[in-house]
Length: 378
Ligand SMILES: Nc1ncnc2c1ncn2[C@@H]1O[C@H](COP(=O)(O)OP(=O)(O)OP(=O)(O)O)[C@@H](O)[C@H]1O
Image (cartoon, rainbow, N blue to C red; front, side, top):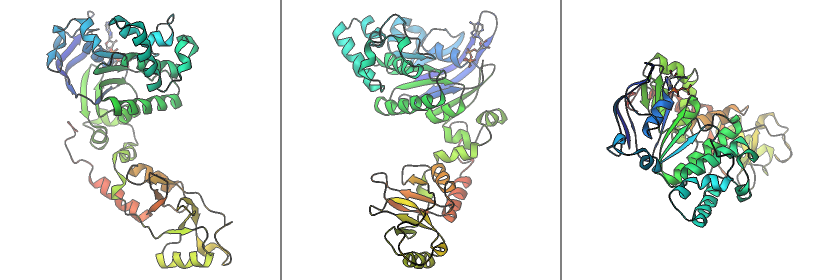
């Protein structure tokens, strides 16, 4: 675990970049530093690997004061990823990734084999190994940057705005990739960003800093969204934090109706009877494998033939037991029925339908939870 204990950084010109920071970045978790430009995020990060030394206070790495460890030794256990990857332009991709293993005295063969493994791990094709950085896209370079930081298998990874210079689509895939990697690797990651959405998506804990280098709040994302410590944090989180908080509420509280589906092979008259007895105007039409095809309102259909060939209305789904209440709500908003279809993770068969009433109940329950828990510690 990384601990900041009363850490202050005052630069030579008198600027106080970080002011009396107390914080823990737990082992195996992603801790995100977020805040407006100039709030001291980068300074805080660089004090961990001693690229910058603190003026006061102590930074501990598993209980050892980092100032007692000489910087090269310290940095061997700490991977570092920066914006625009910072790759060596005159080295090939494989040699870039193998930089630290070479420094550690690994044989060329072993270091390159390991670098190729990492290339694959970060989702890049082996053909890229012999290229130079300028022959890669920005997103690919960022992935190489992550692979290079992981090369010596350091327990700690520092990431300073690593995904800021790429477009939103690439950025999303890099974030997803990082979460996937982290689920396998369980590194202790400290991640700096100015983007609160990125912080909330990636962080197990999010530390919000304000200009002047003071910690405004540190909490798990859901706790931050439901109980910001003050106006500054609330403003920084943005206006739709109520909706965004639903991403952290499971779909478990949704009551599902299994009786609102009808096979596409059914006669319309049977569908009408089923809708009447279920007291619902809407039924979800399913195929022979119980997968959703669309919505019908049988009362509006001519009473002959089956549902085959009937124009079905758009639908939205969420994965039962995996997706959040936000995804379920979104699915409901994508259909004129106002209902969301819950499907099984494997195979995609319909598990049931979340009606507007059940969404309402679940939302009320989620709202009643707001403010519970300790906002300062999340
Ligand atoms: N070498 C330095 N000398 C003097 N002041 C500095 C130095 N480096 C940074 N600062 C100042 O310290 C404060 C914090 O800077 P820092 O780079 O840590 O902020 P940041 O939150 O990472 O900002 P950004 O999001 O813009 O990168 C800023 O006011 C900055 O101008």
